[in-house]
Image (tube, rainbow, N blue to C red):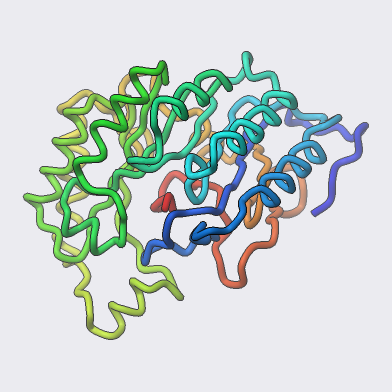
Length: 310
């Protein structure tokens, strides 16, 4: 990865910033992004290195940051002091008050009042929460640790403390999922009034536990025709509820489209910071990607792929 010279100039004057925090409570079986279970690890050295890389990449940069997305992993799994240090470092390097959007990923039950206030005080305007399903059996298949009952209180906590926009991620095509259970998840998500809903078709990525279970006959993938019907039903259900589909997997209330997602969708410049984070400056000859675990997919939180929030 080559740092641009301070006096380098480009036709692009602004960019998105993606910051990758790889820690999860556990590693979900379907995820091939670079993430590791925290399990007693000390996340402090990783946060130190990410803060150093942020300073290295952004100090004297010829580009201004207009959107920030802190993803993972589950950034809100960090202890409050380390999360505050990370967000304060970002705030010291970009003009937070001028950002179009500042998003942090979270999981249900990883955000309490103190953490929500911390996010708001740091200038975070949007939280993207990995709900994935409102069905207990489907969450177990995905190896998620939260329960359906965790989702609504987490959304309420964010709203109560002043988070302006909330996104809920959902996954369809889960083994054992039916049209009825998928529509139930959609309707329960809509009832919580999120500003944005992202609906991803489950992907069987190489070298994941879920793919190994499929290959061993331990899970049966959703029928492709049923999955296609789920996609059509998703568009129709969300449009009827006031959510406009603005790209393949993302649906938003008017004016609540994710500005950071659109950076990727429009092939606009973005910088990736953190282990296995990817970035791309279109005027340069190739994308850049930080090293992560061998075989792990680079993380840019692309708008059409399932998120990794653990």
